[in-house]
Length: 398
Image (tube, rainbow, N blue to C red; front, side, top):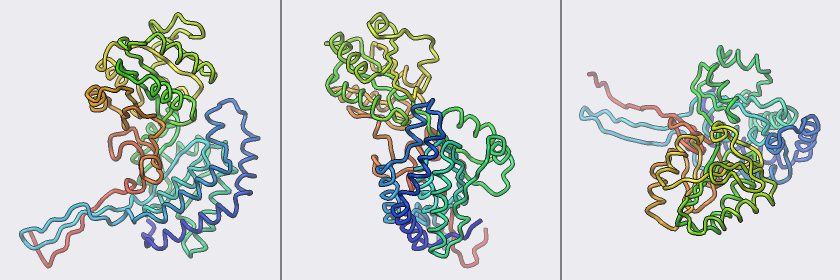
């Protein structure tokens, strides 16, 4: 286990990395161009995640500088207690040790997630997707340069160039200590890691998010929220896939017509259930499985429900436990929805696209957890820590 670096050392490395990413922008874009040219383009969402452009580089630089400006998450006192025998007891945050991040085709994760893991005192093992290999290797080369510039060992950031079989073997029998594994990606990746890992796993990535248009909804807000959630970024885990419309909505027919037209204008394939089926440009539901599916595509499934309770039950049955939004002018209905929907983030009259560490005030995120332990929703710098007890005595025995 690496000896914990001082906060000054960690911040200096992050600022060096920010400067290098800025300085080496062209070489990162050049490496990414090779990855994009090698990619088949068969998966729109994958291609969107893979592509690095000027704004993504700016995001990487901003996230590193912001991380360097944040307080040290390690050694924060969470609890203190003076024992009757005079011992002084503290509980403080502590780093995990070694964090492994497994992710699909997102070079920005190689900067941002590694930055969060490093700032919180952890060694990082990066296992990126084969699609982004050239981009990732270039970024890791910069990490090593930033570490060496500050006389810090480059082994704090390690890239694992493994194929599927090697990854499986490493997960089951790691050749070095791994304290925590964070898989960021689709359900297949998460299932693979959970089945093969001998270490603790934080599950991240599955969306399948819902918007419920209540019978007291402002339909203009509903249209904006659905359109933003569905078409803003199809590759994001906070995108919207399902829309539930209350059968008691006063102007329901006019709203449905406008919603279908608006989604069609944005080339969204529309799947309908029940009363939504027999309409122009709407495909009927093929099977119940489509309610469970995270689309990661220009595709939306729309159905009707008779009440807030029915909407809650449907979301709790089919969603990925990520994000859900209610559009309503009724605060009581919104509270019932928000308290009872079993998702990491619940919204009232706002887009699910805000489930993001930067947008929710964390400055960035390692991942978005749909687990209930150890942290739910966006995992920011202050969450990528465990804790330990410090007890000071002068000879006390029990």
